[in-house]
Each structure stands twice: as structure tokens, then as C-alpha cells.
Image 1 (cartoon, rainbow over the protein chains, first blue to last red):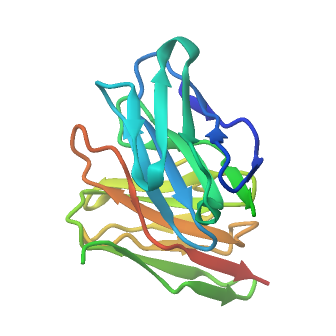
Image 2 (spheres, rainbow over the protein chains, first blue to last red):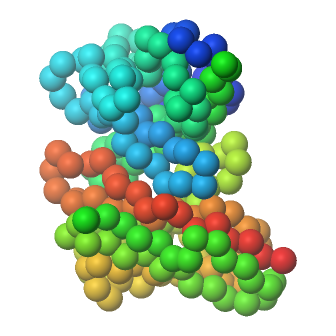
Length: 113
Length: 114
């Protein structure tokens, strides 16, 4: 079975500080992993994805994530938070054998001026 | 511009009424999905369709129905049998082919039933 766990439903950081949003997955085979961002009352937008190859993946808006198989993790980071980063972030894993994605419960990021 | 449209943005209904949410895509994607989003619960899959005239139940299909008569359209009907229909509903699509598993999302419809 595949699942995704996002540690911390709410994360607050100061403007300019490091952003770290945690995601751990459980999968019996190498997964495809995704991070999405959602602004209030909007749909989800893809930030970045890992399929195969390089384990450090760079995305939009200065975000990046590193696939660590030994830790079954895919944490999202950004060196310096901006006010515009305040949103909800979802980690997702592709379900093997199908096109479906399984989403974590989300982490709401607050950026403090 | 290619994308997914959902209408309306906000929808209000009385309890006991069926309501249909629209989802249209012009991305030429084969697969389409409906999710329900509630605070603190992430996205839960209601129904999905990999091809025209075929669809499968997701994790929370009870009280919902769908159709897929055209590639571009995947409407969701929230029936009176759905016990707690007030939620934010998201439609998504992807090409369905190997190596393109990311899903593209519409802007969502917020349904309020009183």
C-alpha cells in the first residue's frame, strides 16, 4: 500500500527564513512524488515532481525537494521565505499501476513579516 | 490557453436537491478526476475516468455520480444521498500516458448545502 504523511499541519516561518515542509511516503517500489501548492479558494498548482534520475529536484518559485530513498522522504525546502509563499502545500505519491495520485493531508505555511 | 474550467465558483443548494458540478478541459487529456477537499483532510478521490464512457469509483463515491460522454467533459452530480455535501470540489486531469502522472487542476467549486 502507498501512503503519504506530512508532518505538521501548520508551519510558521519568518520572512527570509528557511522553509522546510516534511513529507514521508510508504511504498513497496520506487515512487513518483509530487509537491503541489494551493492558494486560498484556488486549485492546486504543481511545484515540482520526482520520477527518476537526479534526486534533488528544483521547482518553481525557488522551491526544491530531495528524494531520499533510505529515509523514504521527499521534504520541500526554500532558502528564504517570501510573504507570497503563504499557502497550503500538498505532497502526493503516484499509486503503482494506475494514474491516481494519493495526497497527504497538507501543511499550511504562514510567513510572518 | 489550455486548461481546466470548473463552474460555478460558488454554488448554494437546499438539502435534498441534486446538484451537478461542471468540469471541462481543453488539454486533450484522456484521464479526469474528481476530488473532495475538507479542512485538515487533504484531497479525497471521488471518481475518476481513464477514457470516454468509462469511470471508476474512488475512495468516497457514495452519494455521487459521474458521466464521461465526451473526452473534454466530466460532470459530477452530488445527489441527495450524500450526507455531508458541503465541501470544496476539485477536478483534475492528466494525459494518462506513461511518464506523465502529474495532474492538472481546475480552480474548484465551493458547494454549500443548507
